[in-house]
Length: 128
Image 1 (cartoon, rainbow, N blue to C red):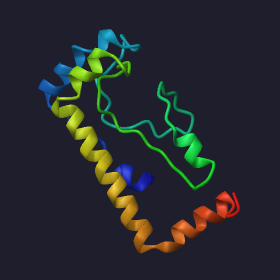
Image 2: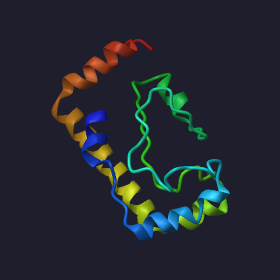
Image 3: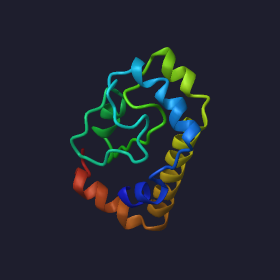
C-alpha cells in the first residue's frame, strides 16, 4: 500500500486552500501547527490518531490494512462543525480523490497478482 501512497501523495495545495485551512486550525487540537494542512500522510506505524473504526472487528477474521490521507486542516476534531464546513472544500476533495486512487490501485494489484492475497492469508493464519 505504501507505494500507492507515494504515487498519489504528497498533495499540492494553492495558497487559497492553505489560507482556508488556516481558518480552522484554531478550532482543533493543534493550534500551533506549523502548516495549516499536511501534504503527506503520516507513514509512521506508531502515528497517533483520534479516530476509531469497526475495522478491528474485520481484521480479526481477514487480512486487513489501513492508511490515512489528509482531508482537513491540521488538528481538526472529527464530529465537529469545522470538519463539516471543510468537507465541501477543494482540499478535502483532493484528499478523497487521492484515497480513492490508492484503494483502486491496491485492489487492481491484488486482483492481478493473487500471490499478494495468498501471502497475506499465510501471514494472518488461514484458520483465523
